[in-house]
Amino acid sequence: MAHSLSARKRVRQNIKQRALNRWRLRSMRAAIKDFNDKILHGSKSEATEAFKACVKSIDRSAQRGVIHANQAARRKSRLSARLKAKK
Image (cartoon, rainbow, N blue to C red; front, side):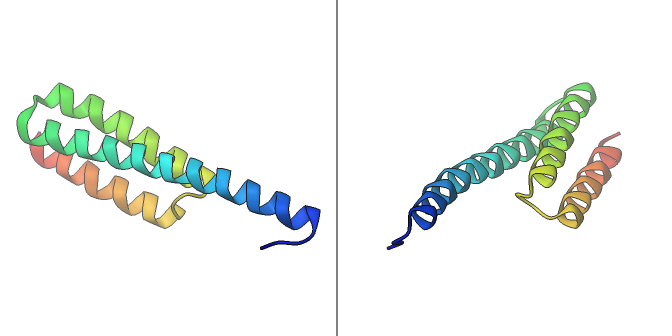
């Protein structure tokens, strides 16, 4: 356990930040699952709207440091390829 006040504060901040990062990651993955569902069972316009929401969520996660920028680019590229194949 941390002894100094600053170390205790850092532990508290880390717990809050980890919870927020896990929430961001879950919401990003949920958006990706929604997009995949629309690709399989939805129309082209639904898939396009889900893709826009998905890209927004991925970009936000990369900007906040939840995922690496290269991982975000790779995910978006693969999703756009799936959307292009649908059309």
